[in-house]
Image (cartoon, rainbow, N blue to C red; front, side):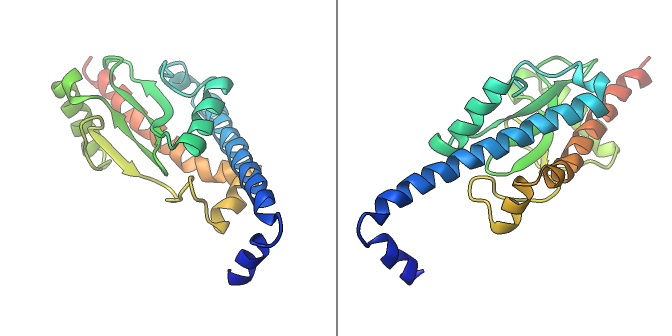
Length: 193
């Protein structure tokens, strides 16, 4: 690293490094936008019934995806994702995938919006063997799949991001887990009839 630092401090090389850094961030934005779009396509193709219930605050539009991901890298923004309402529950309760610096899955609903409904969803998922942590906004959430840092990807994760095939393999378990949770909650409504 010392030798590389010396190269940067020679002549105008530091100015070129700034341009390289910007191009690197632009490339990360582009690759993560691809990942979210592929995730949406996977949900639509594999779980069309669930996809009909995509929440209004999901990153389901290419312009929104691009803006959210760009803000993630450039402004430090986070907390965006893909969410689905569940028939039989209020629209304030959603199941989905959200971005912090890493992806996590769970059931999202503010405590102030319905403590009873939050607890019912959590109890149904716990009964199905799905457990996790709880916060003000998430009655149940957990890290799932490979825990990687999107903001500062290591070499291993960069290899995933640059390959469509590897991105699809990476997101498949997240998509399946959300579908599993959604199915547990949706099917619980059938059991009540």
